[in-house]
Image (cartoon, rainbow, N blue to C red):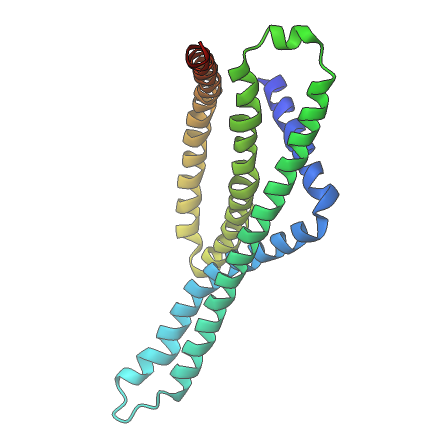
Length: 226
């Protein structure tokens, strides 16, 4: 178990080296955009509370209400949400560029490395397994770079911001929520540990399917040529 965790951490570090090496500036913009986008979601919820308590409720009992201040606050709120939308679009767009560039570098290194491998490597592996390495396995890295890592970072920032907002609202309810979160973490850890084995099995099965496809496709071409 410890060896598996060490291997995973080394893999993530190697993957991040590709990102930092050529896309350092874009990565900084992505991190800033994720932080702003996550904070906007939390600020928006707090802003609604402030809007109702300080602007909408006082107008309910007023016979001649003035909606100027309410309109100004709504415009400010809309500008905040617009900023969050722009930041979300920006970091998703940049992560697509980063992930595609990193995968291009990885595929080039894989191809150059494969040119130096001995013949017995190709004799001991089918065409489908080799194809699966370049397609399915590398595509899994793309999903990790463009989706998983930004989502995890955004969730961490949102969690810290929400925790701060909850502590300022009600400490006792915050403790109840934290207890439930700890329980959910243990459940997720248990389910994630078991699902990782099936994910590895799935990648192996995809390689087998590619192998069968390549073999049958080769037979079909041979029949046509005959």
